[in-house]
Structures are given as C-alpha cells and as structure tokens.
Length: 345
Picture 1 (cartoon, rainbow, N blue to C red):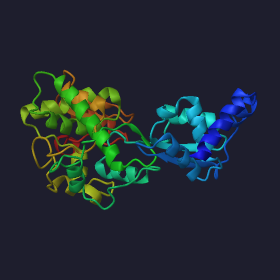
Picture 2 (cartoon, rainbow, N blue to C red):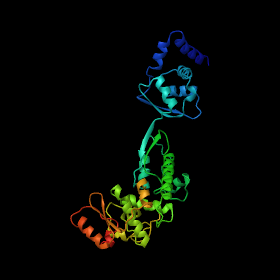
Picture 3 (cartoon, helix red, strand yellow):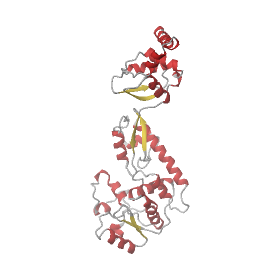
C-alpha cells in the first residue's frame, strides 16, 4: 500500500510541481513487451489494481503500482472492461488505458459458408484461429443437447455468416450465436410466407430452402428453382434432386453420382421417396430462405443448367427434353438438374 501511495504521489508531483513533461513522456512512451504481441486476459470483476498487475504478469516491463497510479489519475480506472486483449509492441500506457476502457478486445473471425453441411462447419471451427474447441470427440447428438436442442439433428440449424469472436471464445458459444441467428431468420421468413404454400411448418421451409441453396448456381434463379420444387410438391411429383441423394450417401460419396446411387434408398433419396427429405441437407442463406417461402409465380416443373451458372426452366417434359438436348447433349458441359436422369428420358 505504501508503495502505491508513493507511486501515486510521485506521479501527481510530476504534474503539479512542474514535472508534467516527464509524466507526459511516460504515459506516451511505448511499454516494453516481452514479445511483438502479448495476450492479456481481464476477468470479470477484476479491480483496476488487479488489471495493472495482470499487465505486469504478462512479462511487460512496467511497475504495476505506477500503472495503477496512472489508471487512478486518469479518472477512468472504473471504466476498464473485462475481456481478452492483444497488446502489440509500441503500445503506450495511454493507448493501453484507451483500449481497456473502450473494450477493444482481440478478435478473430470465421466464415460459415452458405450450402455447407454440418461436417464442414465443425471442420471450419476446429481450424479457426484462437477458437477454443469444447466439442472435440463429442457427437452431434450430445452437442445439440448442450445447445438446448436435444433430439434435433444439427444439419441446417446454423446461419451461414461471418462471425467474429474474442480470442479464447469457445466453439459452443459461436454455434449458439449461429443457431439463434438461424432461428431468427427462419421465423422472419416463415412470417412473410406466401399464402398458398404446400408447406406445413417453418421446419419444412428450412428443408426446402436447403435444397434451393444447393441447387442454385445464380442468385437470381433461387425463386424460380424454389417454384419448381413447390410445384412438384403441389402435384405429388417426386422432387428428384441430386443434392439430397448426395447428402444421404454421406462420406461415401466420391464426387461422382452414379445411377446405382439414385436407386439406393436412403431417407434423403428424393428419387425413391416422395415429398421433402426428413431434415435439411445444408445451411441455407437468407435469400434461399426467402425463395422457399416466396417462390416465383411460375408453372415450371423442370430446370437444366445452361453451363454459365444459370438454369433453363420448363413447364412441360417436351420443352425440358429440348433444353437438355441443347444445353447438355449439344456439347454443353454443365450438370443436369435433379430430374433429368429419370424424367428427362
């Protein structure tokens, strides 16, 4: 305590008795860090004195009593925020205090991409810089229970976006944010749904949106792609969409979809089973969610890729077969849409 008051007295004395230049020099002079960058963690409830000690404990060459005296003298000592910070070489006591008061935590970011499945999500989080993994070796079922959704499969439940996080944050916390974001986006989309949809619930809208996400090459085609599947659902026509078959194959899929794969029954094979698959097959973005609930006003039942990312839509099988001949068998290299193999013959 005596050392603190002595430091405080000396700091004040420098200012009051004409030593303002020396004090000004110190608060604006770079601190001596032990490395080019230093991690500083301030736990909730840490006092200003404890914060000064935490800075010194990082190996930074600064008397904690003097740093605490500066915090007190500034009048901002009670405004210091808890958090995970990254101090970089060249930072001064004044800049350090500003960082702590503004709560400018060290952040990283990870991108969850539209159309990814949950295996890809977990792989991205495992590689994310400075993101603590609390779910290594944990099953999807156990993870969903931890997130408060026991019994619910994780596929499609997380909103694709760029997420920033503080160093030391956990993958569970990030997934909670992504799950809340998807719940919010899905609720908003379902509330804005068209009146005549053949969908019974927001859950079905999410499943359809995931298919639309995987089947669309160009963003502008999403409402039309959604219309094709909505029209098929209305008349009881099989969806026959390749991405659902691929999803059902799981890790066994080698990148080449074969005829036998289309004939191999799984819960997600929309060639062998009618209606929507039991779960989403990927993470749909906002545009796909809106397309699923607000499809284009169209009578189209078929589509085929043109080879430039866009699709040709047809309302009759004859028109569709002509489009297949033009864009697929006439030298085009694009893949067919989900129904060419069975209905386009």
